Image 1 (cartoon, rainbow, N blue to C red):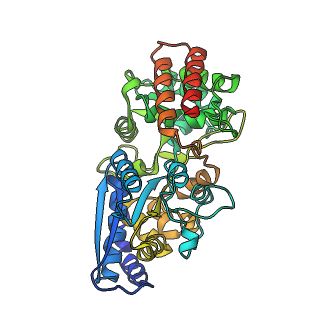
Image 2: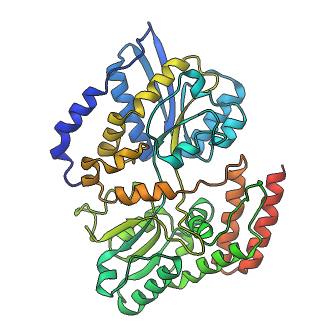
Image 3: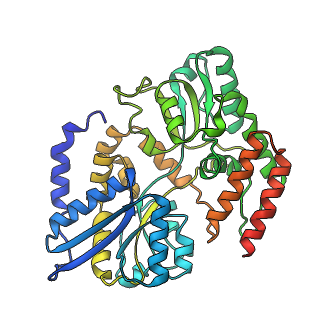
Length: 415
């Protein structure tokens, strides 16, 4: 990331200032932390490294697992009451199931964690709006919308304020920029296509599940959203049905596409890296547009919790307080590119210099909508993802795809 080396002295001072732990170590104390791999794993590893330096008397074991394997490990340990885990890292969509099953300790009862957390991420750390906290936001992740500012300026196109404006801009670019594909999204079956579709669905006034927990796809709002989504396909690269994160990210970095309807902060770190990107300084990241309703960017926060059967809950809470402190959250962002969960850091001068889209990301986080707070989301997402792709490849008509998905989702919710 450009400009990072000149801030190493600042970071060193910030890290040193945050290395104090409030909890003295006892002899042979052990802390087991189950977390993600890849970019989120790197962020957690930095926190473990710093906490270990401050607490040399604690033996820390960090499990680094892919998302699915992490979910299974936490669930298995909770069901079997193995007392083998202390700190657990969880996707915000796992939280309803984990809370309902009693797999997470009540953070407030343990002593609480204070912080100016991003509102949307803070909300999903509780079962109810005014209830106790069962997890603490760690990564402030939200889906963004990306577009080429140079191409928009060249053809007199404004920042898209609606999804209708997105399609109109893409059609203009198809006509006037023949060397660039107008638009891209993740069309792969399952989570990828669902994630791209949800901000459109919300903006059109639709929902997968309504406030009463009932399937809500068999209606005109959902049909309008899916019809719009499918209308984008002629503006996308051939084979969009198989595209995932790598394809979207590389196409944007190489200047092959002008618009990406879904672009995660974790993908954005190399947009301005001249050794990888051909569009340095030419891509804007903004909140997803609105349509009949306001913008509905998708929240993708990751949190830290204390396993309900942790044999070392006080130490686990101490680590979580450390990892979500302003000093360590800033260090995580600078050194790994993972976005912080504390709202004030999105206005921090060092971070804004490193990640110019942070003010827009703060706006997106304020608008962010979580996925349905239901315990059956994994199954619901699989059903929706299957039928969205069947519609995308033309094997089902939009109304038929939504009706069948709604029927199957209703059945899944009843179990």
